Image (cartoon, rainbow, N blue to C red; front, side):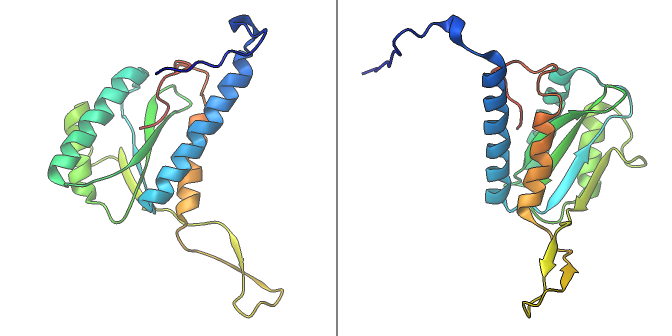
Length: 179
């Protein structure tokens, strides 16, 4: 049984597209942060192109192929990814992952997909994400120390911010904004 709720006097012309887009963006960012926390993501993988790949749809195809091949080589590999445009217009991917990654394997797979030599370039980069937060000392006194530990929430926040950047540019209103 389908139930429809109809608001009295509401018409499709009453929609505020800017408000709806903002709500969609906020919801997508929240989901990315939740998924990064569930994944216990503590490393950030970045996939870039040497050439100027501006087509987002083509880049999504490359990423899906990359994920398929990595999962074939590393069963159970999980990720959360968001695209960003560089200043030159090229698309690149920020990917939250858990744990140490086989960088040579990832470079070989990504290079094979995009048709570039990634072994000698920095088109695949993986780093342990470090928190930039201040923490109180364990004694509870007013002195503060700089905390250098990976924070899952920070990785999720970092990846989620790229959903907001360029959200309006080339992504459809109800399209996917992260993988």
